[in-house]
Image (tube, rainbow, N blue to C red; front, side, top):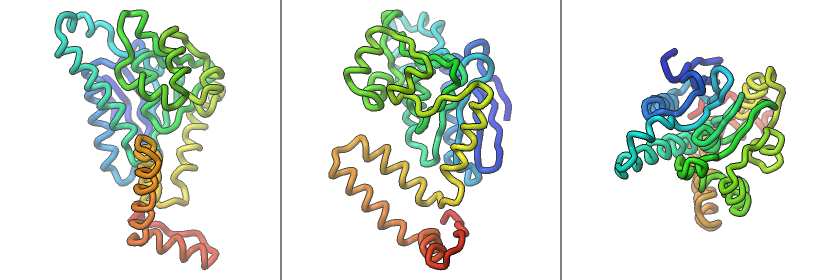
Length: 261
């Protein structure tokens, strides 16, 4: 599928989303809504088991469409709607029960980094840069950046990075845990695809989806609530055909034949 804002293609069980909003893949209101539609469709697509998001051209995503901000001055409700839409997109990506990998091919700034932070795993090209520079505009990160960055790193580090508007190299972001893997530019997508494949190959999506939910949702609650969710989802798996098949295959010393049921 090809359109103005994103190119969507499939390679087996992996779906690739190439952000395609030249020249810098800015996240306009229209592109955000379109991406929300794409992710909702992929959530229901049984053939898709893992998703990779990357950018077309030189940028991953340069952030929100600043030109749209001009029309919102003096209109608090309009600004609130923009923030809600961006947060909803990142929330929906994070809530996906299929692994979502951000393959950061170039600058990921402002809303672009926030989009990546909403993904479950982040790989970056060695020439990528990331940052949340909104304070230089007299604004603040509002697609979840103040919250997710402090959870992925620390509160103190998030304060430092946001208040200084510092841009990090891929290697610097790797050291802080913002990015998990750095590759050479021509190895970015092959590495992302191999990683996506490793997340789902030989595994049942009935357990993959519950695992993602336990880690993401449980991480937002206190420990006892997270443990409750973990044991509930574990017990549910004993009602599934795939858990029965997986255990029996282990006993039989053979590869399981999962039906994702």
